[in-house]
Image (cartoon, rainbow, N blue to C red; front, top):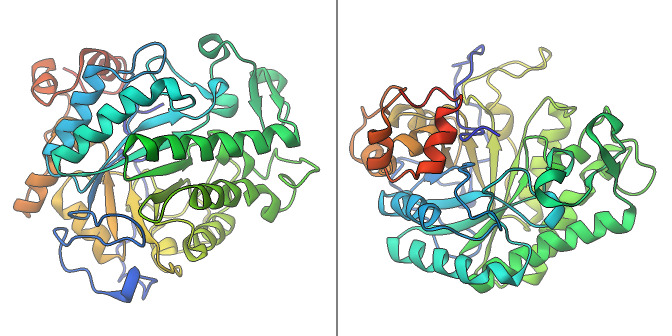
Length: 386
């Protein structure tokens, strides 16, 4: 998993035409500044429009409990001015673990660490969020000790298909994890429906030929998304925020289906925010039948009361401003948030601010409160460390 998944630049065709007359957010207000607070349908307003991406960092203890390094890494970003700080992908089921050092939320045994983190983030002045995830066929049987499961049998990857009852059990695992996070004191959760993890696997039209309610048609393949967010909304309080992250294309996902699902989720009232992981916010759609920038196909959607965010290659104030000009309500920052714990504060204060060039030294990362395990992960192949 990329430490800046959904937040790194990629080579692509760009499209800089005038933004469409899009869906805008609550009350159709015109966004004038990244510094504008962002009110959501539930829970506290975010102090500004810059949020921290859910970044794989390998800093949890082997049993999935919170470590001091992970706490310090996240709290530093809260102190650095991010309007909302999100954890890495935290697995909601024992068999859903993907990598060593992954945060876990599948049992009450993790509540002490989660409560400690929620309290510290609140004291830092930010809004807090846990990203909820299940790896599906990308999970590691070696780490979890459980068989790998997926929407369909995949002999090459050693995965077996979930039964209908098991799919419903995973849905309940997401709901239970969200309730646990609310008990810990977090302001909300984001459901990880992107990057070819379990929920996104259900959307794969190439392979999901299940004959129950969770396969075949586009409606059936998207059913699990609605069941998860509806279940969380029903089980949590009126001040708890529920978000979703989606992949817009590829991995068997057609753009027409992802835009339809995005709009359905936003107008449903179940989600407060939707984050589109675009990989590069300026890229053109992969499917050549579509014109313009990929971002425009989502900012043009109806949103109901939901807020729309985008991620991908946002490394400067200018990048973030450009996304709001295209119609996004907020931006999600990954790489620049690793290199600068206070990227948000700097970007809000300086229209010309851009992140440091990579690679950087280990001393630079330590000064930005990146722990040793995360540093070694970044040094292993992401061109972050000199």
